[in-house]
Length: 432
View 1 (tube, one colour):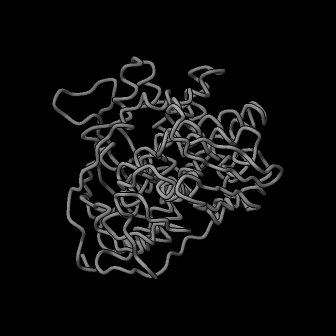
View 2 (cartoon, rainbow, N blue to C red; view 1 turned 60 degrees about the horizontal axis):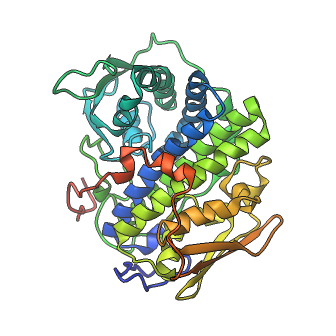
């Protein structure tokens, strides 16, 4: 297997590019961006929902979204990264690999007292900084109405007698202290709590069973799994080449599962047209934001190869075995994106990324993604029906395409301008 690094001039075309083709240092950049994007997709989803529904209904939407997805991907990562168990270290490892806590945007500290008692706190919470300007009602909704059931849903995926409870949380934030502070306790006297019924519906999807088995590491160093002791200072730089490919793909799967859970709630409550509308605006909203950040992080320029490589790594398109996506560089100014027959088209509803890409308005999603790399890229659909083909052409004479409305809304988040730093060097040994 060849490990490649994308060159800063962006002229290197890597057909079938995936995380396992990149060197470890670049893998950490991309995985961190995908983790953030899977979190920030809500910054497009919730405003789209609020266009036609109440604030209270939006909280219900968010609760179902996380309760019906996070237990599934929590248990997926436990199996894939070899840290299954019922104690607090397992819960904390899961939180460190959960897109609900994207690294640095949500600056989380952990303290493990023992396997029954621990605590975590957010030194800084980007999500809180996003909602504070909206007032105490919105802050209360996120930090109380949404977090109470969703935190517990994530914890009881590991142990049904685990509970997460606040020591303090907004709207009351102590001066000079963390934004919030929580205890996590496992007690035999805690009654078992049932998971949300929508969880079983999401679990039946092809997406939830998507395999994840990257090739062996092509570069030495780092942990191949997280079976060792819990590290409260864990960073992606601790992981091996293969493990980074694995968790990066899981971050993308987490984003898709969250969209699916929220979409199924909308489908049940408001019908297929409304569910499809919110899903579409979510994908358009995060599409350009993520592409811009990936292009900048990779330093790939704005030619056709750059567009293709960013699209291949973008969390909306990277699950090619689920979506049937293929990205081809035709020449220096043209890219062709194909969406073929795939498991995502067999979910039985209009909610998957594959379904939205083959829908009549799929061009808007593709345009959002490619214009994040080059705003002079233009998209034309040349196929219809159950599959679709999109021709992307860079028109040097065209004016830069403005943000689509959903993108403008997503940019309200401080996460869109978050600057990541490498907090520790790549781990060079395979043991803790």
